Image 1 (tube, rainbow, N blue to C red):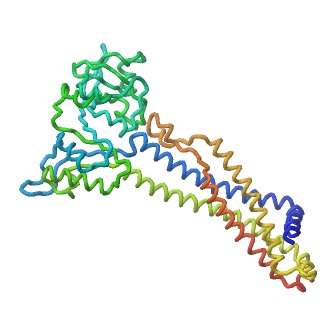
Image 2: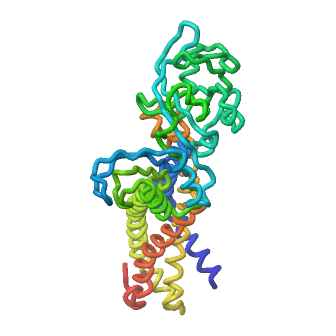
Image 3: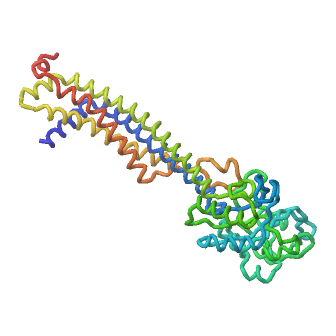
Amino acid sequence: MHRDLLQQAYSAMRHDLRRTLLTMAGMAWGIATVVLLLSYGNGFGKAIETIFESFGATAVGVFPGRTSQQAGGNKAGVQIRFTNDDIELLRNNVPLCRHIVRMLQKDSTVQNDNRSFTFPVMGLDPSIQDIWNLDIEQGRFLDDADNMQHGLYAVIASEARDKLFSGMPAVGESIRIDGVTFEVIGVGAPRMQEGDNDDNRVVYVPFNSMDVLKDNHYLDGIWLDSAGLDHDKLDKTIRGTLATAHNFKPDDQRAVFVFDAQKQLAQFGIITMALKVLLAFIGTVTLGIGGVGLMNIMLVSVTQRTREIGVEKALGARRHHILFQFLAEAMVITAAGGVLGILLSYAVSILAGRITFYSALAKHAEAADIRLIVSPMILLVATSILAVVGVISGMVPAMRAANLDPIEALRYE
């Protein structure tokens, strides 16, 4: 029986092929819009993750400030200064933290032969490579042996290499930093860089070797790897540990500044989710317009086939048979339109390629541009929306057909 009803629905669709194809096109456009908008939201979220990963998605930076509250016998405005003792305190109080890195920074004159530039020079422990996700294009990064031996070695960023060596090989050559000779052992890969940011002009040296350029008793900052840690608890632990050591209140936000990349990423995640919901709503509205078109066409079909419905009922067709017949016709149109729409969305996503996003603001940021990602989850969501729209659009005319009085239907001209 069901096969006969489906064949009858198929015959009815072929009877007015132009109308059927136009309705399918409307549904295809609607489902393609849903898929592409959700894919854009997916691509936006992936781009944000890529931006954070390029700078170190699990990085936590701790920087000294000045107290803004009185604590004990100390007045507000006391300068906080970190030392190696604070590193040991954090190691003992944040035991699950994989890396803790000391940082010193100084703007120095860097020379190679007659080329001389002012670059930021950073003294760091070698673990910073994992925390900041630093990639090396040539040579190698600093290691523990370099640090322990106070080796005068340097890793230079890509733009620093270009300016100092003008295309000539840099690894194995010597540069002078504030008059002190360092051997270049590595060149960093280009990093995403906004405006005049110095990320690609940095010179990295071992922390222990920084003492030839600057007093390294006090630290300019501390970096940690927060992978797998509770970020709220981590923030409280860091502040509580340093507050006890430096005699300031743990809730004094200005005494110590804590930057947590994961918290920033989580905030962007909320924005991304809101964008996805908005895009899904817009896509659903667009698909709903296609559904209205389907409903109108099916209502016209019911009107044109009123006498046919009366004959079917006179021959014994029951209400649910008529309902299923027209609903099946609507669902076949919806399904065919859905398949065409999904194919269209794949074609558009491939043709669109990379959509400019972060590369409009930063150099070397093509990896953080938006790509339309048609994932299985998006197809599942879009198909679910399509099914709901199709059922609602087909149910109204199907119920109208099923509720027709057979006598009145037979009289219809």
